[in-house]
Length: 113
Length: 114
Image (cartoon, each protein chain N blue to C red):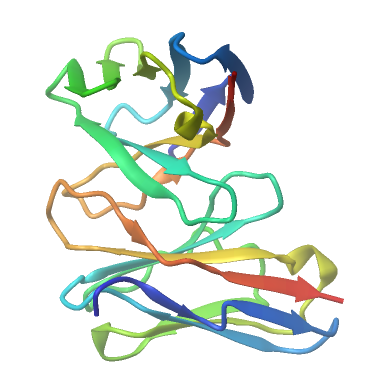
């Protein structure tokens, strides 16, 4: 089955700097890669996703990149703000084959004032 | 409904007792998933329902865990003879089938086994 590795487990960046979280996956059939943000005590929420026919996707300060050959994908947050502090989860699935989403173990992002 | 609804939001039970956790997915969502999140840990897949297909139970950690989904809507996750290591937040999610959308999660049930 699919296995998703995520690093780092904890990341601290100065407010205004960029943050990068990296993930690898094992199943070459995976074709859908969502990212979720979980604030303390709240449910995970989808913030951005990318499909395997696309190499990069941006949404304001957030961007994701995907390298299918190497089976890794990354989340980039620019101009970080205090409200970006949360746990971020990467995930992979074989979407449209109705398969479940397998999550990485999460990255706790701290934005330092 | 407007979102994925889970009940109860908190459950404290004695070791050895059975518990039932309920999930009411978004109306029209054919796919329903259960995940477990232990303190400070990631999201562990438990079970997945898709329409009338047989559920994918590959993530259930032991035969004490079971789940059903009646009428293609509400789902119940049952844990028999609870153990302290079952303490976690149990999250339910739903999604439309065959789309490029991710899940919508419920707010979870925090289970504490004492």
